[in-house]
Image 1 (cartoon, rainbow, N blue to C red):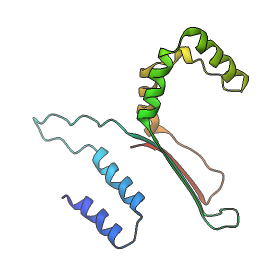
Image 2: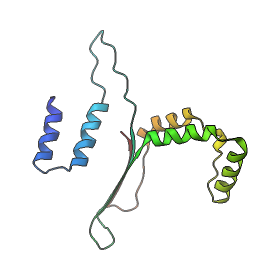
Image 3: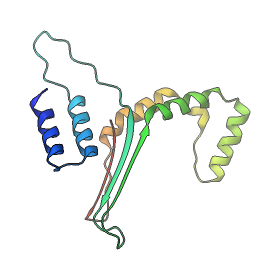
Image 4: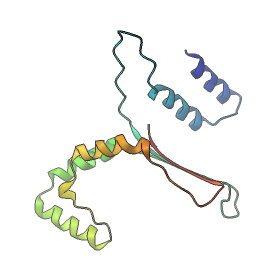
Length: 142
């Protein structure tokens, strides 16, 4: 076991961090590319499994701090894109019309699996500004 992983588990055992925070830190360690030795092949980047949305706010509307933690399996999104490609064009046209009528101008006929992978790849670059100075929002893949 490496030293950083041991420190994370020690902080968890001491109650300094929650199990969710420990999991997130360990996942971040696993994602981090180790320095490659001369002549060694670089390790390929692992494929993210989840899209996470975390919101922490000190002002929970009078009930104390609030926390939202949403974890969406990316496989669900990938499957949805593949299913959309199997729908007949007439059904996609009807879905597109309803989405547009509801204020969601998305053309499902243009949605391809590669577009989703490109989006997932770029999520590391997402920045969200929050007007509440005591609030914190994070969106990331793990």
